[in-house]
Image (tube, rainbow, N blue to C red; front, side, top):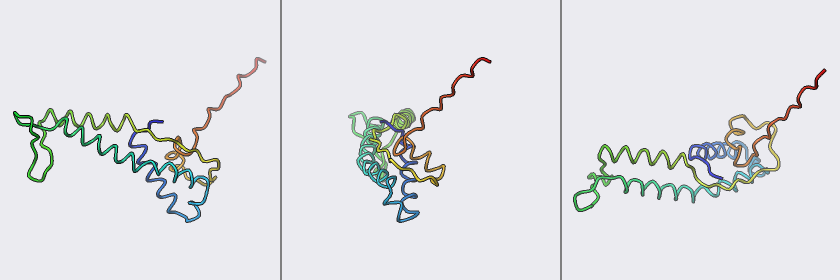
Length: 139
């Protein structure tokens, strides 16, 4: 399932906090699911960095021979148009998202706070099924 980068960061922050809050959280079914999903993030971070570097190279300024122009500190130089194109491509990359394999916990603590529920949903907590309301019978 694809997730926008902002959702991945939110999950990562919430899961770090949840696992750090109490040592016993690590040994729950939710804690196991969190660790299993989080294990994918190092690979995702590497891929995102590579993709961002490619976007920088594709949009940076070059001289007439195609040699990349850099600042004295090594950062790429950009034309105004190149910078706009780079920023647009970076936004698209993060919005299109990254493939994460969810692993749903079979038990969720009843006292789990709303922020964690929101951050964990689709990663380790299944989305709630919509409530079906029976139509009122004619009286």
